[in-house]
Amino acid sequence: MVSIENRSRALAIFGTASDVGKSIVATALCRIFSNAGIDVAPFKAQNMSNNSGVTHDGFEIGRAQIAQAEAARVAPSADMNPVLLKPNSDTGAQVVLQGKVCTDRTAREYFGNTQRWSEAAFESLDRLMKKHELVVIEGAGSCAEMNLYERDFVNFKTARRAKAAVILVADIDRGGVFAQVAGTLAIIPPEDRALVKGVIINRFRGDISLFRDGVAMLEAMTGVPVLGVIPYFRGFSIDAEDAVPLSSKVDPAGAPSPDKIGVAAIYFPHISNFTDLSPLEHDSRVELHYLHYPRSLKGYKALILPGSKNVRGDLGWLLCLGWESEIRKFREDGGVIMGICGGYQMLGNSIADPHGVEGTPGTARALGYLDVETVLERDKCLANVKGTIVDSNIPASGYEIHMGRSTVSGTCGPFIRLSERNNNPEKDLDGAVCCNGKVFGTYFHGIFSERGVKEWFLLRAEPSCQPQGQESEESVESYERLAEHFTLNLDLDKVFSIIDRSLP
Image 1 (tube, rainbow, N blue to C red):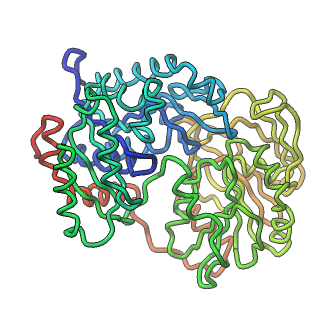
Image 2: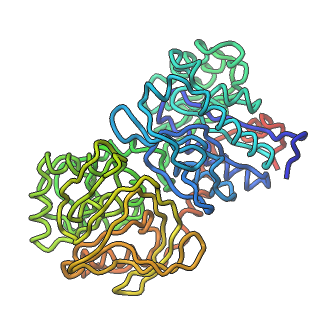
Image 3: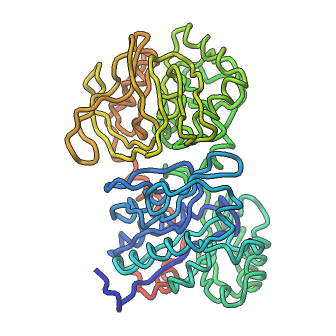
């Protein structure tokens, strides 16, 4: 434990733009510092993402900070992501403050006065810095959005509060890397520019030796050292912050390969927790397609309706766009259909929102494939859960993040029998299953992280599916591969000197 007087070090990872790889860089450094024996913790003052998770003590934060905490080998906490904005419309979001739902705000309302949010964020930052030896701070978007600079508390205001050294990350793959770095440094105030101690060039493709003169030119142009050029690398699977990278994979041409298990997932306008499907995406037997526009589902073995931050809105979009007839044909042809959280609610008979949790109060007709009635409630359920799939006794685990309560009746049976919720014994039931086990839904996010559940699902979709050999701890291996990749391509002596430490 670090005393208040002996304040910890902080290192801030800021970007020249959104999606330049800040989260991945911060995750890699968390593992590198942890491997060096440093007590390190991640921090991001504000996230805007519908990809969230539940901490061990029942608070909601962004998945990126949960991954960074895992990489740092510390328990995730609400202080690591004190402000989480979960978009539920084109102009509004639910505000989760220090792990609990606080309010709904339009963008204009939220940014009109950020004092409340910044005070909570800095309170959390101070607690982390008293508790840990080093805090790795992730910024948001571009750190040089000058029209928002005074209202932006996530980037340089946080760095100033923490007295942090700043590393600037630029993405060479998108082009214009000289303008990204030099332009950012040129327009920010001199006192903030002085905090920037290094630059990381991310996502390089090709022969890295060809950019050596580029490194020298960039250093001469800016006076800031380049700490490393990171080659593009796909050898790891780390939870992403939001759905921006995912959007490039939507609506691929053609049907899945016949030698793969084709799985389709509806890409809702307000899709949430899409990393639920990552274990399928990284399985060599599976070809996973995210589909936004209606198309024939012929050639697919399974269809997944994932989570949504605006369930009635996304259900209306699905019905209006014409997806219902394609889903009906798929079910009639014997395809497997699974709903997760909001997708589970859509598979039921109706979704009622009497309190206007997600918009105008009312009740919406759902798809009617499960005898389930859902009522959205004011209080959000946040829980880590364990149980077993009822029909097979296969262990299942995950986490719940939902506003609705669903009642199962008629021909449906429960999908999962709970044994534990938030580390306490539990005898509740979750989800529903019917149609000879071909249609089922659950509130368990992260359910495919259990190898047995993934194998059960794939066998249900394709009876001839051959089971994979025993898998190792994929996330642990991913963090180590990520750290190794960055270690090979960073000047770690310079990185450690920035935090006043020697490389062990």
